[in-house]
Length: 441
Image (cartoon, rainbow, N blue to C red):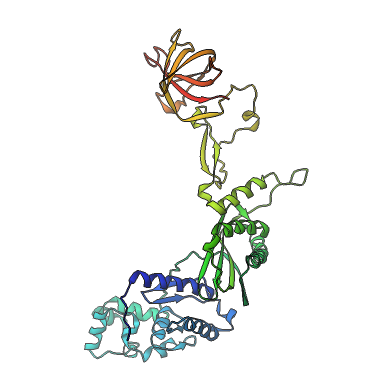
């Protein structure tokens, strides 16, 4: 005999890996304690030529991997749980009552104290309590007994909690001979995308998140998930994103002896309408930019791809906000007219802004005039030319925020700066302060 120390974390990791592997039978897989799995195969058994064939396939595959397996198919979770621990196989629909009658009460998933109390009064099998009134049983042994009995018989519902998010739509392909070349995997993804496109069109939706699940013949499961900045239906678009994901995975994606099942699922769907065509026959949306954002998101993660969103503010540091590039435009967001953004008559703005305006020491001829010289980061700058002021007042709802007077200045070496004086002399502050906000070319 060989013994080995029990490592709960390793056991949990192995059970999670087995749950991943069982996704080949149904996407609804839940953990059951420390040594069991629950599979909801409703609507899936016909893909395996019936429940018996599905059960035999699952048991034989796991046995070939070195596991000792006990499994059962039944109408209810409670009956399947009890049947698996008593080697019952497939329980015909509506026959769980007869099967349970001969089993010990411990197989109803009762607490040990409840089983001990029942045994003391001579109730040992499920059949001993099947026809007894429920109220006296609940009063004497607690509500758990009645609830577990009704759940096993199908008189009370018992939904399972899948460990993973269930895709809205799924397309998959199984192989008699495993595929191992990435080119073949990509071709399969493209074909599955064609199937999903038709389903998405019928629903008037597009996918916002997609998942490819690769089932290796030795039981290892790999998952690739990509998100998009807008609803997507086109198979070519999906494939491009997954190509980026496959590149990013690199050596972490071990094909082993190949994949015998590849599945493409839509994790998140959204209503999708056709884009308006212009006179040239193209849509008004910038498809190239969308593709770039999604491809970068597939490789780096959408949360790491950002863009600047214009804001309704004249304060320079509040003029734009950095947001995830996949952010959908909302009606409440202010989008300035492009003619305003490119208005040549508007005041010139620097190419570079400091993250935060920095305090400087400045000397002016008059309190409200331009600076003659200023000191920034211990260096003194002599002003040769200046333009301004350009007054920017704070939004009225910010209360007592000071007014800013901006100046474009050039020093004796040709370097150009954007400075502002904070606070109106004698009206808002007795001593206005000067700040450096940015630099011109």
